[in-house]
Amino acid sequence: MKKKLLVMLLAGCMVFSMTACGNKEKEAEGTTETEETAEAETVDTSALGTSTLVELGEYKGLTYTPMDTTVTDEEVETEVQYMLANSYTKNEQEIVTETSYVNIDYVGKKDGVAFDGGTASSQELSIENSGYIEGFAESIVGMKVGETKDCPMTFPEDYHAEDLAGQDVVFTITVNSCWEQLPAELNDEFAVENGYDNVDALYAGIREQYEISKQQDAEADMQYQILQKVIDNSTFEMNEDEITLYVNDLKSQYETYASYYGYDLETYVTLASGMTMTEFEDQCREIAIYRIQNPLVQMAVAEAEGLVLTEEEYTERAKEYMEYYGYTTIEELEEAYTKETVELQLTSDMAVEFLTANAVAEE
Image 1 (cartoon, rainbow, N blue to C red):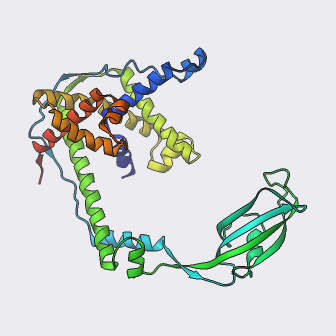
Image 2 (cartoon, rainbow, N blue to C red):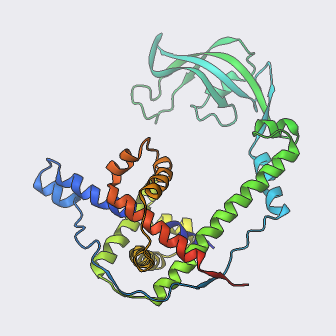
């Protein structure tokens, strides 16, 4: 399941993404970096667009297997229970206990002088898992809401700030509020906190979310199946250099994802998908080829069927992309991607719509 998920995650083939690569190259060309640095950072994208469609294969009346979009009671209940397990209610307390959560102000002083990073307001922390130095959270236990107390303590010898390592300090702590977190209960109050009128509306809302999500997944899967069949029916002349560009781009994306979690690429791939690096690289190649071939067959279908955007259709469809990508006007969208690129993408959309409208669902 994870492996298929990885394919679908990377299988997008927006013309916009191809344009972004080209824009990066142009930006690099316009910099004033040294020749050595520019050479190291600039990627040669001259191979983009060098693969060609030799012959468009059969594309009408293709069959696909519909994805099951049934939403079960078990799926809805599982989601509700997940929400409950990750939600809590606050039970206000007057005295801090070892299991309390608190909101505090504090000022840390060394030799009577406040030190950098030792002062904060309205900080929330768990007494059990505060993340503060040893003795800090423990000193709050027993304090009352509204109380202020001087709490002497010592920084660890290996503390990262050398000027504080092993030093005696005093934190003046004020407890603004105190509470315990109790597991949430499934009632109308819980439903309202999550944006629903009552428990029945909560269940209905979650079911609707699942239905929408499954319909979207089914639509994407249908398009993928049909486009892959058109590709399989067609003949291409592929350029290995272009495939390599796409593969490297995919790997670069995943290296970025890995860095967010502090992993190298291989560790991240293994944890996220259960793949070996060989399997991952094979799949990157598969996806790269799909990304290259997909727009080629889409544009060929559009040409074969005479699918041409009217000015009215262009404006209407471009507005959807404008809103999706967060632009306020179509002109801003065109400035970011060029009008030609937007037209190509919208024409590709029309081709996909034609293919799906002329496909047949297998029973």
